[in-house]
Amino acid sequence: MTRSDKEEYFRDKFIDSIVANGTGVEDMSELARRFSDTNIKDIFERWSRLGREQFLVKKVGFINVHVRSEPPGFWGVTKNVINDFRAIKKHLRTPCWFVLLVGQENGMEQDGYILEDIFSSPMIESPSEQAEAYKINERNLDRSKVIHSTDKIVKRLIELGELKSTSSKKVILRKRSSNANTSPIG
Image (cartoon, rainbow, N blue to C red; front, side, top):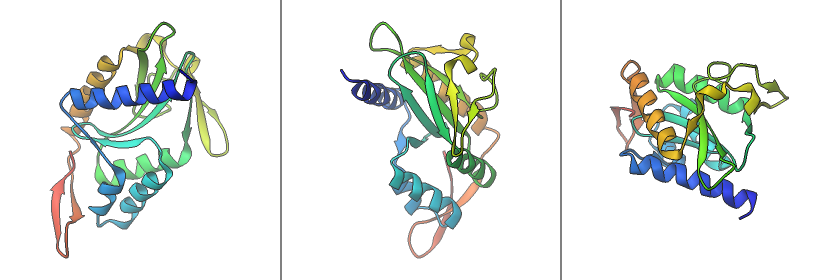
């Protein structure tokens, strides 16, 4: 299995585990069609066009998934996604998470880290800054905070999302037809 095949396998395994744990993933192009707020709608449309790994996970919030097929983990997080997450948190009060996945050395299972911000725990050293992205090396992370196995990563993500969402619900306008309705995200 090539590196890119293995990364695709891990990404699919992660998404499948989200569904198996009682929640689901929403497509960005579908989400963009429901929003009347132009700035937020533009973010979702851009994410859809770029094919980035951003998803809305029901009961969790938005996630940006980065996969490395084998250790050590080394991931790039674009400044645009960081800024988009800040806008979403501010305007929608919806939690956003960076999920860093790395294949284990022995087998077809993966380890992972969940970060609310790329400058906070489990980060122990600042990521290196480049013109358009931050590069996170696994040595920048607190290895005692690694989550072993896809299922445990997803369960922890759902747990974190539920904790955050209880304090962050906001009603937003969604364009359904010619009339705008209100409905909470989540």
